Image 1 (cartoon, rainbow, N blue to C red):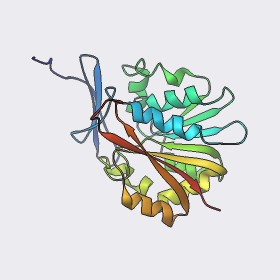
Image 2: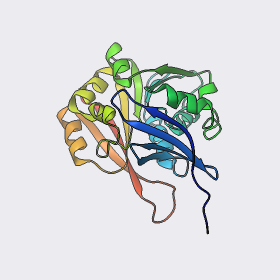
Image 3: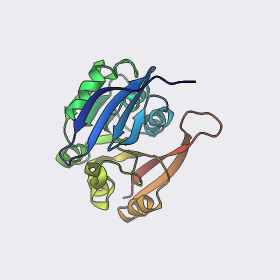
Length: 225
């Protein structure tokens, strides 16, 4: 079988010099970072599980949810589907091109989640939002890069550091949950969670739900008192 060639749709470059490419072929969309596959619409089951598992955790009142990384919108869509109607979901996306792609060719993939009235989209660094107000979020969902152990874009490395985790801890409400997507289990990240006084559990999720699929890891963490 001869596959049709990939069509390049757009490129973007981060302030740190990382290059992102959006391309499509036969209804498959990919975002690549520095030449490596970052995400596609072929496998997004674990991104949806990130939001579903986090928002199944108990929280008081109307949840205020922070989503770090817009991606292709699948985590945001799952958060909207799981959250109550009085929830407020803040999405932080660093790159204006990713936002434009989600309002353009990627919009139909996750059912246009940016159009939901519960969503507030902010162009900027999720770390800055976490520094702004203590105890602000009932849930923080991080769907950034390929997770703590497989960072492709250098700009994302600091988020998974002990310093980054301390910012997340400060930003969480007392009963809040931190959920982190990872391509693989990360013993070093688990050590950092313990170092920064989080209790956590890891859930393994098949990428597409089929036998033999690669399994991704979802970390669900709560700050210890």
